[in-house]
Image 1 (cartoon, one colour):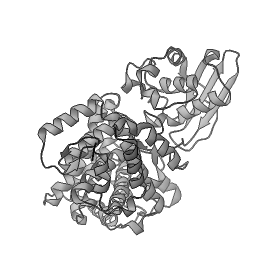
Image 2 (spheres, one colour):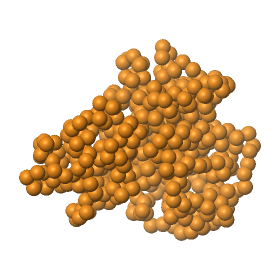
Image 3 (cartoon, helix red, strand yellow):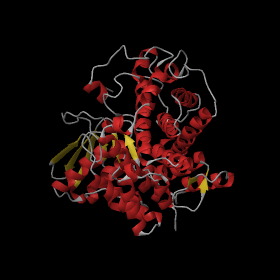
Image 4 (cartoon, one colour):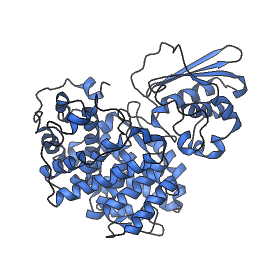
Length: 469
């Protein structure tokens, strides 16, 4: 798919370091030299939004079995009390804290996503960033910068993966984000950052087939863990071959688009930033690529005051209809949040889609169950023009024969449409009470995040995440 960077700037095929064996180091030299003043204000603001969104998701996820099991295992392992376990009174080594906090955020499937790579980059950036930031007592500005360059690293690894091996999960890309972020926070050299990324290239895994099971949560937790671990190892002097990513039989050659894709690592560095172009904050639970579809269904039903009993058929069209249709009868939370029929049926039945739709009461609502049975791929999609792959078109066919069509291209909460703090805060205040923190503390956390550039020590934020802290 053509990227925003392709649209905005012509590619420089002679970008510095684009030759095999040098692109990774060239990328690290550029990213590692970025300072707070070098980055667009919107990129830094988006980093703050990611933190608020991820903590919100984790507040719900901490009670889920996938997060609980991984937290219990980590606490049994123990180690240096370096970094806070969110909404708990425990501390763990930074890499383990990153793991369990990422697991909590991803368990609820209410975090963020990259519109191009469908990767929950913000989960790893927040979990690893706060864990390592607490360990080194980083300035808030340093954390924000590290999050922006981590997001960029993930996006560029996604670009070089285009045209590569199918079936790999996007957590493969997320891991690179955590590695770059950790290296930046640890103030490592360019070479150490490059070796951290090389270690990741030899470590990453993840299979797309695991998306609809607990494997998804495990993969995201592992991405945050290995991202931190790789940079810590590089800081101790652990090295790998310098062409691990961009050389013959390296990461790009094996998993990506081959030698011709190597230049994408360094093309037009600084011309645009992925966190500005592709970030999307979830404003409802579940698979983010279905956001356009669910919003189209809401608007079609709401604007025409559709009664569920009047619906004869619901036709859906869009880039993900064939690959993410999902179950017509989801049996649990995991299946429901990846079910297009459930999303669309719920949106039409209730004329909204909220965090309540991740509960059994909604999943097994008889009205929703009935509407799910009439959701089908549209055999003759309306001739609408869209740009973004998250677009969705919903056609409601009434029993009277009337057809109501609505299309959404870039959904609410996405960078192309503009992410509003009001939407992020609505989500924050809907989900953070699940953390059991007092209301005043929840307010203080958000205030601290909104002013993070003036926070001299990240522990000023992490201490607020501890009950009674």
